[in-house]
Length: 269
Image (cartoon, rainbow, N blue to C red; front, side, top):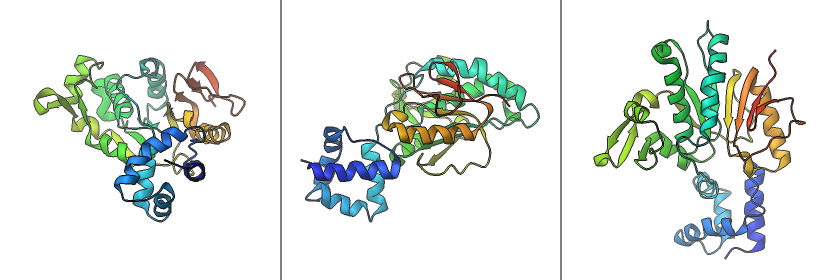
């Protein structure tokens, strides 16, 4: 069982490095790490943390175990509907010459969200899509879920809410139809990278859209404020930020316009 001292050490580590606030989640931290620590032969959480602080492989394992990654296709579909009907026509008009769509999915998890965005883009641009660069940058802190996303295999149950036409067009059945694999034409539209949202943003060009859904629930207000400021500065004038439908954003931090709950827009230049 984790001691108070060990819990404080682990939660401070996650907060300082990744901005993730676990200070009220002692039971969860204990539950997710206990079996792994025992099976690894460490005698205590402290002994494990001594290794984590020197070994990048165990550091990654700690992050993978402690970050929740619950997502599914069509989650909060109203966002994708708005993205297709309002945001993409704006981008298409704005980028008629460069034909460049810049979208960042900052909490890619196991790939469902960025693949959804890619399907909407493909559907929207239709026969013109080969003329456009519409590859999506998809990042996550957890290397474990990014590996799943890169493999791109999902169960029939995970795809049950997808339109049948999309399922046929973008996935191929494997394992006797109990699983489906993302087709290469869709996979090449998503660039997966490991990235810590607390790091300085390395992007050379501004984004039209940032999806940062259901990730800020793990941050305290000070961390959220800094992140939202960085996202605001990263967006093109008129660019959009999507957050989770259960999340809130204090607009005193940055001058975002509220489009509708959980959808925000940077003022056009």
